[in-house]
Image (cartoon, rainbow, N blue to C red; front, side):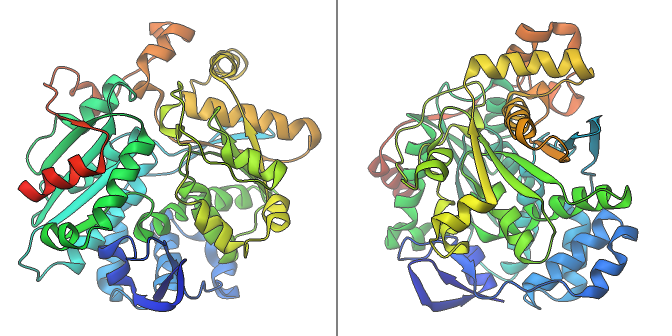
Length: 434
């Protein structure tokens, strides 16, 4: 498998270099030189495959021998050792539950796969690998869990102070060991800007042996394709037509992963991008004008992104053709008041507890169904509602909230973080002291 930079299409690197470098020196993003299409033999048997078998077939097809078959099968089996089930609300509304991993968020799929890929790629290296990551909520916890105690690695997580939920913060700050949390006095966009600056500083990048665990890293996007195949497979068994996927979106890595899956041959009815008031992409889909701006804090904090880095990949996949993108993707935005209302509505109508991000997705699904009432919607529930106890309790009461033990045990753990100004220079100076 070879990949190119979106800023230098002729500069090709292999999969290992793209994963470990994360970000090209020209500040582009890595994209596969070729996206293979799954053959007819796969589609003839996919309904009978279990999740791990199907995942291996898809991953091995796109990696094209970059990892030996035996090792890749082991990586997939270990990383994806939890399900991605569909919950039925009614005939036209399904919820894809992506919170059954160790940190109760969809980021577990990408983080666990990536950690094992990086461990295999660096198995003979003597220099410590530094994983530098910005988080708006769930990425940091998933990465911390995936890399905790992984030999030869240290993880540095930047998160915006006061803009993640209490349990999310504990997942970032309570593990210790090879995990360090930097509490940034700013927004997620500031955190992301600081991380990019560190990668584009050649001295620091080399000194610290930097790699990224954000969705700028191609090894995050590849496993995120897999649950779309799994969801569509479950519907296909029921004889349903291709679904409309509704994706709560912030940095747009999750949606980009679906675009890659579609290029590999997955049949999709339509794609709905659901955002909170940080709606630069829905606005673009309506107007053809892309106007990134500072993010605004909301209840659905993991989606508080004003300059989504994966937008450049979306443009690349559509050849910078706005009409083509707007034909395949529709965008809807919701505010916090509507999000709260949706949490109550889903519980009252269906007896289902949905988190704020899923609630934004539900609102977008309702908007789409108003004009397409016969479609089957799959709404991504990207995080367990227990990660947002304040909001869920306020809307549904404490009796509606069940907190799984694997995060409940963090509640009494001490928070350990390092305060830092929202400045690339502050991060680079801290890394240099390192």
